[in-house]
Each structure stands twice: as structure tokens, then as C-alpha cells.
Length: 388
Image (cartoon, rainbow, N blue to C red; front, top):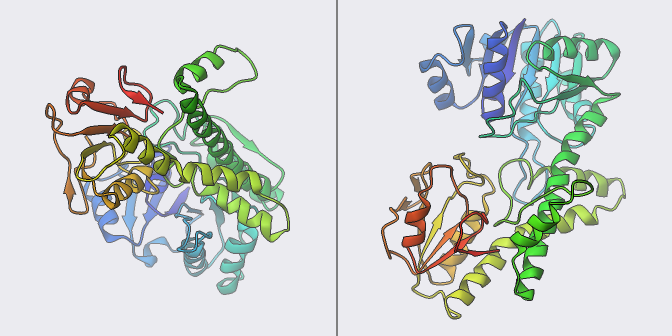
């Protein structure tokens, strides 16, 4: 198949690799020229792949897949501008019609209300439409596009069949559901499930701390039950593109329809406030004041072994520490600089307090322990440190 994948971020680039390896001729489209030049210089992902930002290169292909960001705007509301632009691009490029698949995460109804509507404004050709939400977990070495089950649905039987035909070439397990709205809702619910349970353990950690016992030990004890329990661990908060954002897409849609989304909103609030809770814990450990204290944050990215800073709670804590008068440093094995700061080596007794926000796999724990008299570990994995 001749395929165009619009958006070459972590979702689109991974999809390009998988589709190319499966033997498809793939064109990756992105408006960022640096992304395009980088991928073409490395000849990624294979000789039958081309990266471009020229609309002429994507004219009249068989399949168009949308893999663009769906962030929040400055008012913390869903921002579908990238999705609209991608849809309009397809409308201009696919003059003879094509199979159009949306992988970008959004609210139930997005395929019909946004993608189809925007394409039909500029193109009245016969199209097939399907939703197949991405399920990529960056830095996960166990689960990939190939072995992660895929769900999808078309707007009609012909669309569903066409989408199944494509995804079965790159995925081991593909399930068709009854409608695009089901597929879109399932993706949101997956991340809402994570957000709510992370919020629950983050709230538990705050309660257990007041009791003077270990939240980590409580969770490990509960996890010995072989049924009816799934282990989640507390942390500094949630980050990245999915968990802190996807729930808001469903909550916004629900509230537009007059349905309550109190549980989702409360989970978001608990996780958003975790950096402030940790800030208070650090202040207590430093005898009530952060003024002029040398504090090092280990790990700026939102999760281990990735360089993605989007929605990272580490950045929230960094700013709050600076506002509290602390002298803030950071150490990260992947991210070497941020704004006017550069990663700092972990030398003995360099700081008043070291905080492990994210533990990358190559972190030297012995250097962490020796870097400060007080170590606060949000990952819950370092023996002898203070934990949530």
C-alpha cells in the first residue's frame, strides 16, 4: 500500500517504521523541517520511506493516517487545531478519495465531527474513514506497535474492513468494535483508569505519611492479594501527552452533554497538586525553609528513559523551588540542558537535599546517596531515602 502518515512525532515515526518494515511505501509528512531533515539523513525507517513537508509529495495515495498532537490550549481546553489542519491537508491531497484513519487521541465523535467535516469542506470524493487510536508507550521495551492489541472501527463496514486489512499487516492482534465512538472512548478510558488510580495512591501516600508508616510497604502488602487489586505507585505527579490530557477530553465532552465528570476532574486535581505536596515535604525536611538551600532534582522528563518534557511535574516542582528561594540544580542522564540550566554532576555533599523525581535506568544510586545528607525519592526505589 502507498501510505501517508501525517505527523512524525513519537507516534507517527514509530508507525512509519512499522509500516515500512511491513513492506508498505510510506511517506511521513511533518511541518517541522528539522524533523524531516533528521529522518531523511538517517534514511529512517527504511529505503521505502520518505519524509517530507511538501504537499505535492503526498498527493493521491491509498491510505492517510493522522498522528498529530491533540494538546490542551491556554485555557486547559482541548486544542484540535493540528487535527483540523491535518484533515484539511488530506482534503487537498486526496483528490480521488482514500482510506483515512485517525490515530490521534480525542473525544468520542472526533472522527465524524472534525476529520470528516473538515475533509468534506474541500473534497467531495468518496472516502473511507476509521478510528484506530494509538497505544504507544515510550521507552517500553516489552510492548510495541506489533504486539500491542489494536482496536479500530470504521464509519461503515467497508471502512472497517479496509482498516483491518492495513493494521493486520503491522499488528499481531486487531479487534474491530462497533463504532469509531467506541474506539475513541476506549482510548480515553484507558488513560483515565491510570490517572484515577495514580491519584488514588498519591492521596493514599499523603494520608499514610501522617500515620508515620510507609505507603510503599502498604501498597506492597496489598499487592500480595492475587485478585481484586492492581498495583499503582505514588509519584511526583503525571506527565507526558496522554495521562494528564486525555481525561480532560472526555470530561469536557461529558460536561457539554450535561453529564458529570467529578471523579475525573478530582483525579486530575490530586495529581496536579502533587508537586506542591512534595514541596511541603521538602520544606519540613529542611527545618521549615527552602531559602538559599541547594537542591538537586534528578530526572526532568515525565517518565524514565525518555526525553519528553511535556507536562512533566519535575518542571512544576523546579519552578516552585525557585519561587521559594532555593538554589535549584538538576541532574539528568538524558536531558543535558533546560532553559538556562545544565545537568550537574552528582559529586559528594554537593547539595543540601537531592530529590529523585524520575529514575532513569542508568542512574548511579551510590552517587545519589552521597550527593546530599537528605535524599527524597519519589520513585520509591532507593533504600535509605525518604519516600512519599
